[in-house]
Image 1 (cartoon, rainbow, N blue to C red):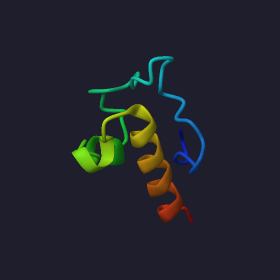
Image 2: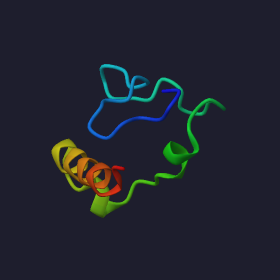
Image 3: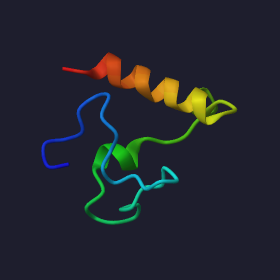
Image 4: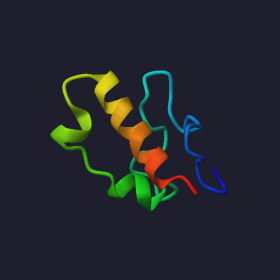
Length: 62
């Protein structure tokens, strides 16, 4: 996404299984590469992880 990904907008690089199409590629944004999974972020379900990521976006929205 040339100007970055706005909060609340699905990344255009995610496929139907929510996997990154550019994982490991030099085009992958540094912010994505720096985001490391942790128990508090991932929890025990996809719903927990999505809630956590949504909250991060809300807290960092400009």
